[in-house]
Image (cartoon, rainbow, N blue to C red; front, side, top):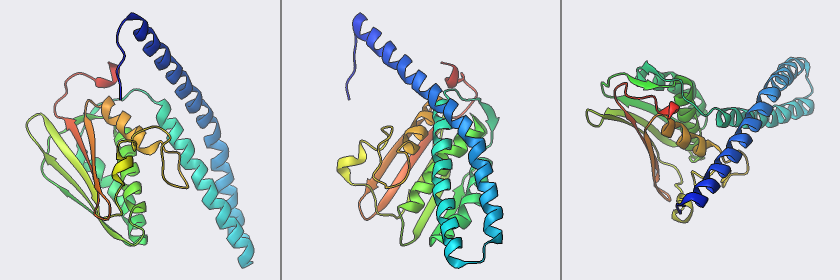
Amino acid sequence: MFELSGGDNNKVILKNKEHLLSQRDLAASVAHELRNPLAAIRGFLQLLGERVVDEIDRNYINLVMWELGRLERLVEDFICLGRLSARLESRDLETIVREVVAVGKPIAECRGVNLSFVAEPCPPIMVDRYLIKQVLWNLIKNSVEAMPGGGELILRLALVNEKELELTVRDTGIGIPKDIQFRVFEPYFTTKDTGTGLGLSICYEIIKLHGGSLHLKSEEGQGTTVSIRLPVGPGEDPGKQ
């Protein structure tokens, strides 16, 4: 990591930032245009699947549905990447987490993963409900995929001090090799055969928009813990800075 300074270098930074913003705007615009046709394709495939009785043909449809799911996840990633500001409201984070866990629990159980959530009493905080759900879903999905043989996935919410609360997502998965841990938040970096490599990068950007911090600790064969700290109290809207 390096930092540029000085007048000329500031111009370079501004130019690179403007270029990145234009790329994000383009990606989000294209993604929005793709969302409706993909939804229509999924709907007609589901109807077709209900009429197919041949096992081979049904397998073909399931394969197409799987690939379509990958495209839909790609679209959602780019839509989220293009949204650069948080719409903050006073929310109970425990309620938001429980909503995501309720959806993720049956999916985790199908993979042999026991998903649980433990929460201590915490005051409401200023968050964008949609964006925080996106973070949680990405982290849960990553953890479940890191436990192909099953395991434990535990979410904990606690008040760290009068200014911060902390949400941790801990799994007992395969862990992340030390030599690539510093790269996991880079856009488009991934070790998976599927996915965009945008998930953790988006999580990091979203938490920054909330004025918080995100840290990762992992050991191979032991699992991974992601810790999110968010400020308590209204304060200034960090998404407008």
